[in-house]
Every structure is written in C-alpha cells, then in structure tokens.
Amino acid sequence: MVARRLQCWECGTAFYGRADARYCSAACRQKSHRARARRRVADETVAVPGLGDAIARAREAREKARIARERAHATCGEASKARAALARLSARDGGEPAPVRRATPD
Image 1 (tube, rainbow, N blue to C red):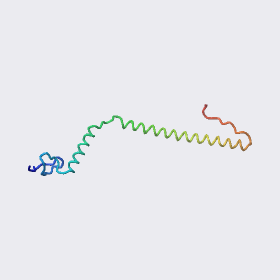
Image 2 (cartoon, rainbow, N blue to C red):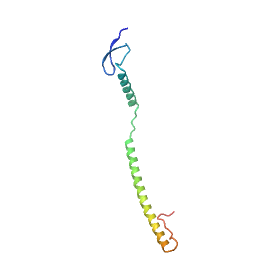
Image 3 (cartoon, rainbow, N blue to C red):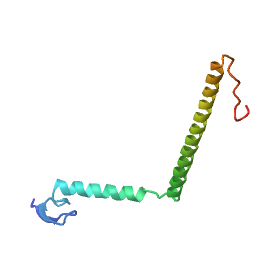
Image 4 (tube, rainbow, N blue to C red):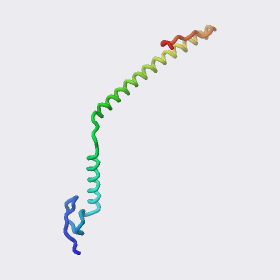
C-alpha cells in the first residue's frame, strides 16, 4: 500500500495518508467535529416570538411590586409608630391603653 497525497477537509493542507483519511491531524478532526456540532445546534434552535416583550413586562411588574411593597412598608411603619406612641401616652397617664383604630375595617 502506498500513502496517497490528500487534502485536509478542514484546513486544506496537503498531507499523505490512507485512502480514506480526511483530516491532516487530530486537531483538524476535532475542529471539524465541533463545527458540525455547532451547526446542528443552530439548526435545532427555535426563536421564541415575543420573548423580549414578555421579559420587559415581567421586569415592569417586578418594579411595580417593589414600589408597592416599599410604600406598604412605610405606611405600616408609620402606623405602628403611632400605635406605640398612643400606648406610651396612655401608660404614662396610668390608665388602660386606648383602643387602636385601624385604618381599614376588618
């Protein structure tokens, strides 16, 4: 058997090898395999229409929820401070604490 002069399928370099050889080195064989794998993944990738809009809507909803949470925390904090002040005043007077009226009915 005589080695034949071939051309590498990946880099185009001329080399001598067996009749069924395609690549000049293991590095070219690996590079070719990775390129084929990337093409397969790219062909199987499906674009999701409207994904960017959905992400933007979710981001906006999270921001609104954060603002509402901060507003509720500030409101509840002020109400609890007022209740504590009333309790201190009535305790200082020696009487029973005054009943606390809630802003919203139960």
